[in-house]
Length: 252
Image 1 (tube, rainbow, N blue to C red):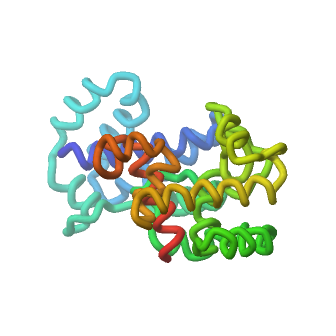
Image 2: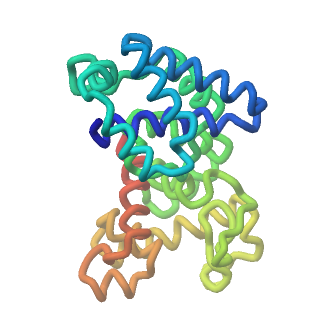
């Protein structure tokens, strides 16, 4: 049995275990047993008994589990898992369990890049509607696209005017206290003060870096001195991801 097949079986067990908080151990074993029976329904009786026994106890000692499974005849199990293709066979009961799991989990604005596609950005700026008038005022005052301001707010605070970061940045555009003071802000949690000041600072960064939005965003996140030092977007994963996400929100 190859490693992909083994991984699939373990993932089936892990998926069922994740739901244990909503069901009893007896229910868990019953569901898992049903999945294994469905998966192995076409193998021989002897193989069924051997594999079912291993799967029931295998997670306690994965090394022995692999060795024992390796002694079983290879083709019946692999043919069931792969069904003659490169796609791993997933029993219907597992598909339903996955669907139920996904239905109960929602992506937030900080989901990793490898699972977020362009469609996820399509309506990402809907939260800016509440601040449309302020954003448009800031855009007109500082000659910045309103959508770029909204994109920065989306990434910085997800349109939460009262959020405070672990570093102490405050409000919609996540102004650091000293920066807010420098920009004349008396209340960083006031949406208008925060957006107007954040847009003013973003305008300063655009002016400093020849109206290049990527460099201005990098400076907004990491500081202008670092952008100057590295001659471009600094080699920091946080800053690189920040620029990428804001530009995605802005351009989609």
